[in-house]
Length: 245
Length: 314
Image (cartoon, rainbow over all chains, first blue to last red; front, side, top):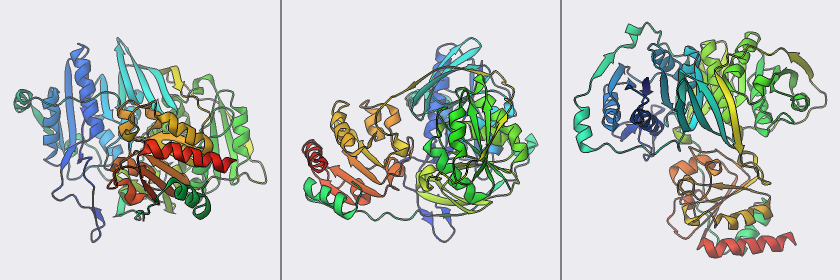
């Protein structure tokens, strides 16, 4: 079985982003970038499946500028086998990403449920539609049994378990696993692993966006910082000033 | 230009989230039709027909739709979308699961979690966990949109009832099967529709200590939530989680207890009308967004709050 794991290079989750008021864009200069946390969970899950002997090869793919290769190396150091870098200037919208990913055939594709920059939460679902495959989103547990996959999903009120026919597309939720740290020897080994380069134009996909971002603004600031001295004062304020209880 | 809204329901009645999605849909275009897909969901269809501004309810029954499995539901919506320009759903797990699959089949992008409608092709949506707001414009004729429900009012019951049209079920591609669902049953309101939420963080120290919050919540008719730190520490299950990676809420009153206020938690609750923070660390970032901050040990403050509320009740 071959597993594909798409990974995205995003602003590190600990960084508080800043909106540039002149250009109406998010300022990405000199800030720490990392693998999207949900994608890291996807890489870890693929490695665990391989460690159980249920997978022969894990291929990691990333779309983006040259620096995306660092993100691929990161996944290779964790234990993926080889990488594909699809070179694009910026990160294309989810439908276009899904179209590129649909070009190759895999038994299982594991994606993060969403990237923490554009928060779209679409690519896995779209890919499953383009490939006409079964879909298990927001997975918190994955068990592979021959031709089926049992997936426990995080849903609004609790957990749902479904059985998918292989080949399938899965997206990861936070609690699926805890990703490992790459060891130094594995980081060294990852440098020898192959990363193939692809150009979207070679794939014959029209990369014209269907949705255009006109501007990005800071959200209205919340004015907080009010203090109370006691519970009595708190309850009084909530009852008589705010009127919420 | 007509709008189709995917209804979320428990076969008996519509979920609150859908009523908010209807409000958003009517801001985009009209008429709005609601599609109720399920099994033995007559009452939900009747409930949908009462909403103000809903012209027609499409009612589809089949055993295959009992659990809203993604593949058959998306296939059916794709067929229905031949007669509509917009497909709208609340950004619930079902909406987020199903709609992108329909969008890809229609060869359009999805616009996720809109918080405002500028015109019928231009929308605002939060990115970077709500730390920035993007204004996006669609160039396609058909559009698929999910709605962040905290940004829209609930559609009210109208004076007249919409017509209900029964529609035949579509094919089930048979790619997946439902096994089971474990939904926590609670007397308390759901997090995403609660008017008041009492949330605990790592400062709670154990799952057992959440009982204190439950007691306060019950006096206020509130839901109980938690920060990711409390979920990761195993104090409470993940469905309690409020934040970027959990649920986004905007109640009238949000009481944060023992929560420091990590960016990712603030992203999920900073649109609450009134925020109360109880924390013993007076430097905790949660105080920067709180209307009423109380610097105190929660193990003294929460029981005291409980007693004060009891007094009010009497």
